[in-house]
Amino acid sequence: MNKPIRVRFAPSPTGFLHVGGVRTALFNYLFAKANGGKFILRLEDTDRERFVEEGVMQIIESLDWLGLRPDEGVWLEELEGEHGPYVQSKRLNHYSSYANDMIKSGQAYYSRTSPEQLEALKAEAVLAKRPFVYNYAMEPDFGSDSDTKGLPIRLKVPEGSTNWTDEVRGSFDTKNVLIDDFIIIKADGYPTYNFANVIDDHLMNISHVIRGDEFISSTAKHALLYDMLGLSRPAWVHLPPILGPDGTKKLSKRDGDVNVLDYKAKGYLPEALLNFLSQLGWNDGTTQEIFSPEELIAKFSIERIQKSPAVFDAQRLDWMNGEYLRNKLTEEEFIEHIKPYIPAGWLEDPDYFKSVLRLDRDRIKRLDEAKYIMEIFFETPIIDKQLLHKKDDASTVAGWIAKTIAALEGNQFTHDSIEATLREIAAEMKVGAGQYFYVLRVALTGRTEAPGLFDIFSTLGRDESLKRLKAVI
Image 1 (cartoon, rainbow, N blue to C red):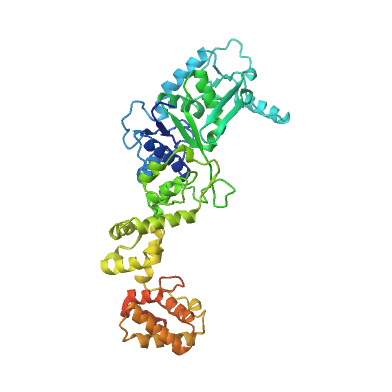
Image 2 (cartoon, one colour; image 1 turned 90 degrees about the vertical axis):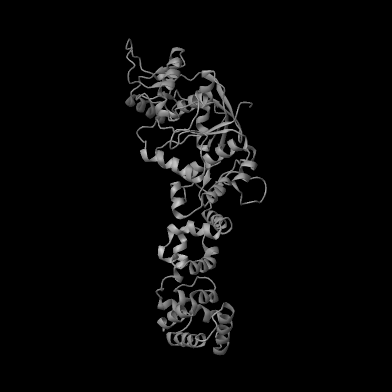
């Protein structure tokens, strides 16, 4: 294919953009940038019954947050381009023009079958145990009635078969007798998806249609339309499905296919989310896992897109986000990112905050975890007595803590001096270090999971540490 690379992401704003849609947008974006092409954002809003006004802005905000800015199309202000408007509801004249030409040529017709008649025909097919495929022969005899106002327009599917090729999956061959005379213009005057996307892709000079595998079953209809209209087909690329963590069913909202901006709210970095999604159905043939945006563009190719389904592993996403938080942000950048997720008062002593952050940074995988992970250094914990006494009875535990307080009163309170003192106490009491340190960790933090015990003591400082231990006694 020699024509310039032009790809489009064409979501339908019948709801909010989810991660599956972002994966599609990302692959289109990477392919365009890797080949010096254009990435276009088009809104397919012809399903007026399910149209969600807020969905339009959510799509734009999501792509903007992720850095997937189109070269042409819908944006906060429509981006310059020769093929607009880029919203289908503003392009009705194009669809009616093509549909009228097809009626005149006998390739399409006004359908007079009522909804009740259509249901009766479907029921008849069910009783006969045969697939229901609507065709022109099922149209009722309307005599001399020539009023076509409010009637849908159907494509008159010809005999034969329709062949088309997917750049990833190979060739498909569909017998036309299995393709129904599908509606191209609805009774309300709006086009169906099957018709509008073909007309728009042609008029916008789209070279490659990269989309989810759910459209494979419709592609024979699209290929047939291109042929009947005498138009040049684009190259079709269907991406593998994204499965939930168990690998048996398609990703659902419960598993992570949620409003993309929810990931922003939870504290995922856009670079980490894109890096993760880029590897759902594509790899560069190496074991590399972390890519810069420039590397993704340089390495991306259709040939490396996989046929097999990809599994959405939320734990891997968390790991990858943690890698970005630890290794891609400076300390000051990390603090700026974390500010919306923590109480402002924690930043009153910048030096203390940084000492806590250095201790906890490796444990934070999402920014919304930061408050819980760090709060043991800023708020007096509530101690669960059952947790505290899990290793021994109350009087014994109280004795251990009392010995600790007495020993640490004059300690230099450095990491090493604290460790030496506590290990000496454990040996003196003939108590296992793990058992003893467990009690001290719970007494200081109220938790069993926390940074290293000696780091906790040295970061809290002598006064706060001893204050907490005395309060427990």
